[in-house]
Amino acid sequence: MASGDVITGSSVMGSSTTGAHVLHAAVAPASELLEERRTLYRLAAELFTPGTELSDNLADHPIVRYEIGRVLAGHGDLDPARLAEVAAMRVRDAGVPVAADRDAAELLEAPLRIVAPPGVRPLPLTEADGERFGTAMTIVAEGVRLFRTLAPDMAEDLLAHVSMVAVLKRETSGGVVSASSRYVPGLVLIDEPSLPIEVAEALVHEGAHEKFFDFAIAKDFLDARAEDADYFETSWSHARWPLEQTFAAWHAYSCLAQFYTSIGTEQLGQDSLLSKARERADEIGQWLLAHENDLLEDARWLLHALMGDKDEPTGEAAARSQVDDVTLSLDISEDCHFHLLPDVRYKRAATGRVVVGRAAQPPEVFWLDEDASWTLGQWRNDRTPKTFGWILARAAEEWLVDHVTASARLRKALGSLRSSSLVGLSDQAH
Image 1 (cartoon, one colour):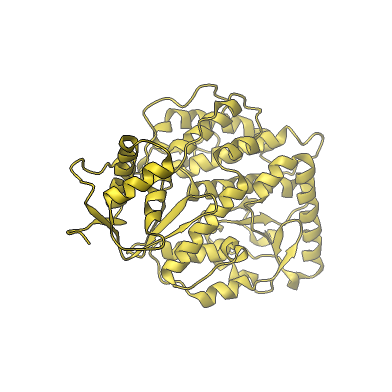
Image 2 (tube, rainbow, N blue to C red; image 1 turned 120 degrees about the vertical axis):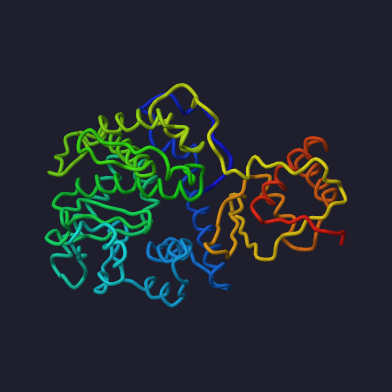
């Protein structure tokens, strides 16, 4: 998972009334988070189909991201023709892009299948449904406007992560009020709405999930240990959730609880969770606090911040990727040569962070910390081997530190790069 700078600014923490958008921005402003997420998908596309370039629209498209994610998981190959096909899907602007294409049921087959209850085949409303689709579009547009009116900062923060909305025909949805999936990030599915407030609530709920999906892609939230962590059991339905789903639900309920304080006298929809959101967020949050050692640093910080905890996270240090604590052997001399392994590809986001990929099976894509990013960048224009001494001299100069400090940091950076099979130690000088 991701590794990078850890936010410890307690100046924005300590009150459960602090806007979620403020706390989100303390981890990463939405614009930076989107830039890093797009950089990761662009690198992944280039790994599988060299020469592929993704525009912002393509890199944001939920089905494009689904196709890339599928290949990253080791399932098949990336088909550029498929990316072009889904990118041509018609949408209508209702303050958010809404799927309108007559072939939307086919183009959105994967997310519709993933969220469907057993035995149910949800179908999206499209332009083929004429006036019914037009009515739904009007309510969606009014819901987006209502969200932006009631909670403008939250709307700007969360809607940045919603790339497309699809409205489901109510008689086909199987009771899906709203849904999203980490397998198809950026897409929000909502039941055919009756009231604008239903749309606004759905966008808070699912927008919070989409925000979490992007955090999980680019920041220190969860790693492989989450799969073995304890399950949370809800008191209201006795459903059992794995850690990732538990954190996502807590985050969404926390955002819903804050939104509820902004709605005034708005009449709620019949399936609304707003009045229950604070109680459920607190229940899940207390459980997460008791299991916070299974979270990585950014997730731990956001947990404490949204829970209104004035104290910094406690317990053992948050677990980072194992490579982060690997330090190069002290017996490495300044004449030792290092080379970038031939199958390594990487991209630097505008934020300065570097995402690295290897076309292995299964493929590997992950973020580097600041020092490892800088070190890998020494091969940006020239892949010939570099001596430790040569890199060290540049590090001391550019990091503005003495050689002892630079050596310690560089040894850790090179150690992590070697452990990750990105950089190798040459057998002989070149």
